[in-house]
Image (cartoon, rainbow, N blue to C red; front, side, top):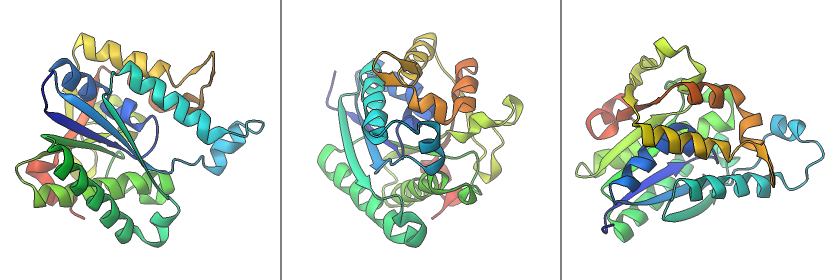
Length: 238
């Protein structure tokens, strides 16, 4: 393993596994160090609390699943920014600037060759709620970073894309996501990481029960969906 880093920004736990587990595995197998950043405070939504009405420590359980999945993906470093998602509705520009500033700090500290983050199925999904809005703000911060640092690769990975019919997944709004095939090893590692979000010993299956349709589709689809902001920042500008 050498000193090169790739950084993966995930707005919520399980976003990174659904959208980027193949890319994380690819970096690991290439001997590149990986850092996964949990961007938001990751608090359960009202709907998700209704799924687990008797569980008091949902936030803690959610992070337990995340850390298990990150061990499965053999991630070298975890960061938790805990940016309040509630701020994103009232002050999206300020939150975007905050994320951009944190990216600059990581860039200065680690000199990563590649930043990754996730976005929804298209660029018109903010009305879905906090979750989708946080994806959009992260994507816009990444777009701004790509324009400022054209020497660093910056890639978006689709997450909600798995809610679309398979034939439509590479035509997501103006993003026009690219369909990237995963190797057998990358497929296997992604499926193993997704199992960390299912119900089992010591786990309540929070991730899977939150968005089962995305997990089920990702299991059967050995691809990930990306757009290279380094080349296409103007398409998803802040």
